[in-house]
Image (cartoon, rainbow, N blue to C red):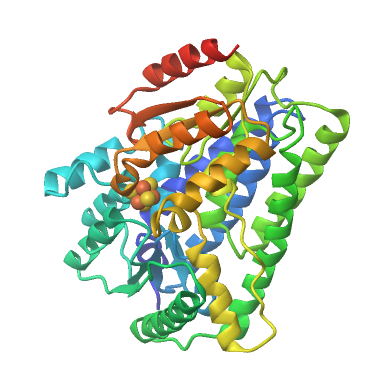
Length: 428
Ligand code: SF4
């Protein structure tokens, strides 16, 4: 007979995450007035449901499959498994645990992993080193960056099979065909490791849910053009989490559908979620994950809207699920290669600059705020080029903040707030 407690203990950080999310959900239900920050109320409820089911499946003894955020989780539903997003665990716990996850960064740094690598993976690497996670396999593309390509092999040290799908550099037809074949191969390889045959019909159903979600995301994205922006800043953080943790799940559809209803109502009333909108900002890379509260602070203290971050503007086309496996996998390849960070970091930087200039104009942005994250070395020189392009072509400024988005010790939230306050004063 299966020892359910032993099985459940293969995903201890997921249990920690469920506990913090459930507490946040209960607190916000009790404390926040009805209309306040709905993304946190709806989002936490949906995450709670997904995590509870994952833990239940772990209790039943299903294999634990870790995946990189750059590998869309809906593809893993061709198996009976417990998908665990490596980066979502690190950053959600960084945001929700009062003491953060810095102690885990220290564990992995002390083990010998370079301190300047991406904290999005370091948290779970340390948790695995400490046997808090017991993965049966890990699947990951060879992207989006050198950093993740160099960090993921750590898991082999713990004898965890690491399955890699090879990402091509160019974003064009032959690359999508190549990567589609890679995705299929890697799913079969994963099946061998966990002793299951992939069920692509079941996977299609989850991809179809995600196709519906993408339509809603696009509608929300368009509504952000309105002045004032009817979407609260914190929505971006929950939407980022939803994209990497809940994709392909009915809960993801619920999150975006309920949010769209609220956003439409605000739009019709010409309302901004946090009072008066004074500054419209675009964050072309990441939000600050160790302190989500800054989203609300920006609205309340400065009147600054975050129109979107990198996880909220990479909207892809629906995947054709009706025309055979080759078409299906090509569509899956395109979606994966156009995924946040994959799109920007696995090709030349020109399309990123072009997109940003277009967004600035289309969304009437007053400024950009660029979080230059210590891990993203492949993007080290891009902020300055983007700053010049925005100044020359749109006439708006960009603030660059050097930091680790998951580790509050590199640049403290106090310093970040001071920088933004000073920058905002130059705009008002
Ligand atoms: S692109 Fe940057 S943030 Fe994303 S995984 Fe790589 S180093 Fe981390």
